[in-house]
Length: 357
Image (cartoon, rainbow, N blue to C red; front, side, top):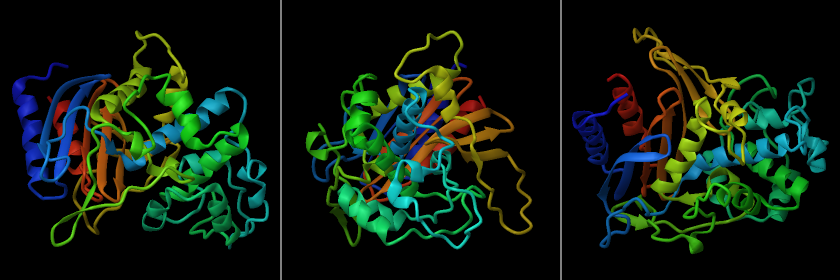
């Protein structure tokens, strides 16, 4: 698929429209093919009163981190150190007596945590400020019990707690916390040299802001026991390498290269749990496909374009989005430095436009 200047100009128009809504002081976005950024543009500033963002400006990418958490679990699975079908209490004995209002339900498995159907409620406002807590503090939270919204294994509901528990499992199996394991087993092997979980180690860091009467800088947190839900700090160049590494798994002409096999990377991009589409009563809009949660990734099976994978991220001070078309490997990535800035609002129509050409 050839993308010309007019196609990229339309992408720019969509991001101009998004940025004009004032959701962040700064934004960097790019169009990718595989790992290569073929078009990128910055708007606004990474630090108010100072510099504009660029390809090497670091942003906290929030829940895009969950793709690394899912990859870390699958890496252990492929090494024979964990089973996705095993109840999590086998790895976390403190949960053996976990009670819920559905006593006849299935035991929560590792796969349920990965696919967001463990029965936990959506918990963004509760979980986001907890990144820096210790394993001991996390243990105290677990002692107080876990609330359930549905029987485990029955339906999708987005849960940060589930991905924090996955990190706790990694720690119990490997004696390395998630930050250490993900850095040594994923970031370093893939040469994501500008990616870190510690803002003190990040270079060219964009300050995260919240809009009150004026833009105010947010307080940085982490790393800690909840870093697996949203703690990664990276730039557009490294994010393109990661998204391209995942999308390349569908290209039979490319060699298989670690740390994850192509089959495992494709598994991440297969729907594990359907996400019901919420529609207005009497809506006449046509269904465009089926969407669901894979392993650390949101996956859409679009009736017109085929499989699209990616994830959104929202955090105090930041908003992010990545998405790509697995057949063509065309992707759109965006990083912004405003609280829950939701650049998906531009990424989604931009990718659909490019795929329609």
